[in-house]
Image (cartoon, rainbow, N blue to C red; front, side):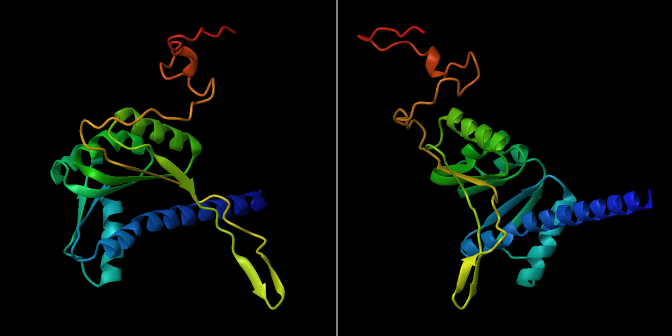
Length: 219
């Protein structure tokens, strides 16, 4: 029982440490954005929880030595608060959250035509959901997704080989551009495989009407 207690304690400490590490890593994204836009730009951050916003303010203040004048933090749901930025008022939107598909429609209203939307998610189910949500709006270009696989190398004289460990998955980044209102994308050339969508989905190729002059295929 004592051994089990030590194992449980170790696992609990490990989980707490990693949760804190992930929280700090998420809050430090503001640093990169603020450095990218410089003093001539502005960064607007939205946090659901005040404690998360406090961590972000602390990190940014420690890095810059003070609160940057070109940065603001709003506490609240993005869906409800993003309208304060104004219609077609921002050039870029970065969504780093559990369910970014819930915010696709609201951010489409504040993005300028040609503006870029970037979504970060960790799992394939999240990736599929957010990409389909982007497509369904009809307000964005065809989204492109990618992941980064990081492998370091051991370099010692002629002993050149990859390290024994690597980051096999770091997350998915999906990017697309805001279309001008009234713009219609050309049809996609890549047809989804049969069964790629739930049964009864109008977008399922199996349910599409046959083209004129071509007989319908029967299974």
